[in-house]
Image (cartoon, rainbow, N blue to C red; front, side, top):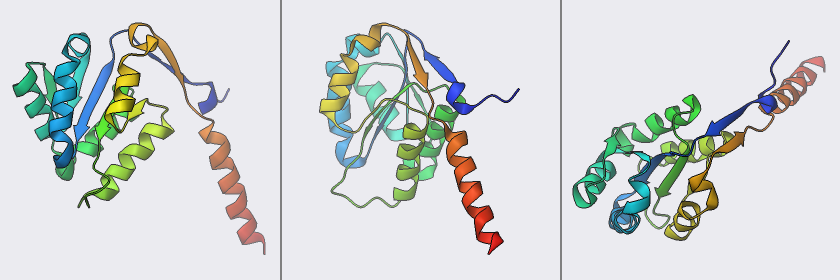
Length: 164
C-alpha cells in the first residue's frame, strides 16, 4: 500500500514550537513584539536564527534556542526543522525594503513553510493575529497538500516531451 502525501497530517500540540526570525531592520520590532507577548511565548518552545535569538533572549529573558545567523545557514536550519516536523509556527519579520544578500535562502524558507502548511507571520499584525488565535491553546491537525499528484503530473509532462 502506498501512502499518499495527502493522507499525511501532523499534530501541532498545545505547546507550539515557534521559530523567530528578523532581518536587521526588523530586529527591534521583533524584540518589542516578543517582550509584549512574553506571557504567551514563555509557554512555548522558541528557536530562532543566531542574532535574533540572542537579542530576544537577552532583552526579554525568554529562552530561545539559537541556530546560525540567516546568512550563515540559519534560515536553512529552520527550514530543515519544518521538514522534520519540529517547527510548528514561524514569525519571520523580513524587510521588503532592503536587499538581502541571502535572499534565495529567505525565499526557500518561505516556500518550505507553505509546502509544509506551517503558519507563518511576516509582519507584526499577522503575528498578533496568530498568537491570539484560539488555536494557540489547543491541538491542530496540519494537513499536507497532495504533493504526489503534482509530481506525477510533472513526470507525465516530461514523458510526453520524449515521445515527440
